[in-house]
Amino acid sequence: MSQGNTTVNRRWLCACRVPLLALLLLLAGGPLFAAEPGTQSEGTGANSESVSRLIEVLEDPQQREEFLNHLQALESVDSADANDPAVLSDTLRLEERVGLLLENYIGTLENIGLDRGALGRVATLTGALLVIAIGVLLNNWLARVLNRRLGRWRERFHLDTERFASLFALQVWGGLAFAALLLVYTLTQVYTQQLAPMLPESLLLGIAETVLAVYLVVLLFMLIWELSNAIMEYVSGRENSMNTARAQTLLPMMRNVLLFILLILAAMVVLSELGIDVMPLLAGAGVLGIAVGFGAQTLVKDFLTGFTIIAEDLVHVGDVVTVGGRTGEVTRLTIRKMELRSLEGTVHTVPFSEISVVDNLTKDFSYYMFNVGVAYREDIDAVIQCLREVDEDMRADDEFSSQILGPLEVLGVDEFADSAVVIKARTRTAARSKWRVGREFNRRMKYAFDERNIEIPFPHQTLFFGETREGEPQPAARELFAAASPETSPRTPRSA
Image: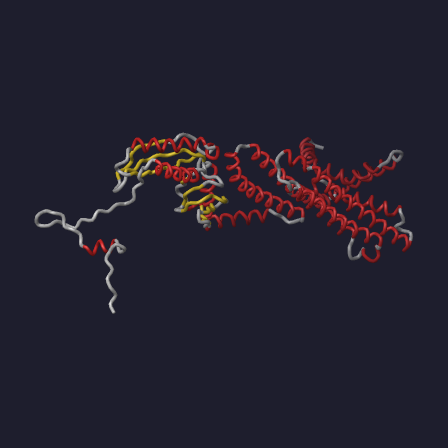
């Protein structure tokens, strides 16, 4: 054989190395791995036959081409399987585990008389029902005990009294579902001839595998949900009152976002377990999201503005604010709107997109402004001293001492009004105590002014009736005084 032919043959063998190895594994792998100790001669014969078969295939051009086509198809299938996302049932090998469990269960039934005639079948079914009922009762009892034992941990970490209770409820319902499947499987095994055609074993195994996978998915996401809520409750419980107000604002929004994400992920995983390809759904959801984004620009603006307001800590639940021309107490914040309750009880719903300026009347602390009007004849310094005494009395009162954060600030004479001199002052109070403190201050100031004969003027009006030619004031008409004082005016006799 020439050197050129030898080189070509070597290149061909190198190119066919992978298919040759695959064929050797397919043809010779089974007998090699199936051979038992003591049967070496038989395994060697099988290997010789496999090698001979391989030589025959490679020598025949048609069979060699067909063999290569099969290998290419097998390679494409393997690559496609490698690109497929692994679902939970494949990762945990639920099919093998469920099959092994049911096999052991059926073996136990056979040992207690599954094949001993009609009476044995009835006895077996009765025993299986008893075992299933005991299992369900034990599962329910265990769920109650674990939920009760978890109560002291809830109290210790200041968690909600029903935190993690949904997990134990899921445990109870999961036990009932698996008990029902086990009962149906038992009936099909006891009465095989009657029920096997309608409910084949492969169908029941597939249902059990799917139910178990869905149960594990729901359990996993519920555990994430409960743990997340527990962490948020624990963190908010350790903060002071100011941060607690912020937590009451942020936590509901965080819970809503977390719940939305968990529901989407859980739905995707469950659909994958049911054999539904979620990639087209995700692509369709992306296109739909783009379309909705163009058509719901106001909604997107609501969300972005609301996120900015909350992230910058401008508003808390419980604050008294003025937004969008409405004033009231913030009762609720969502991702797109703010709810205010006015003093009259009216609930105002203001979308975030309509909010350009936020006037927070109770941010950290407040001021109550006083515009005190006294008569022009009063001593201004004496009036200011009276105001300071009223402030000292209120700060010494235990009911208001914690609500007043500093002494009264007298800003001075602010205005000369038509009938009064206006003195402006202010007092610094706790965030939501300004109105209560201001009303009590006004009440005490009225009593203090009355005790010191300080006049709080009301509007005065002077009437001018003109002058005579000599420059003397024109006297008012007699009828005017009679109309002003009817009790002093002379009585006129009634006409007959």
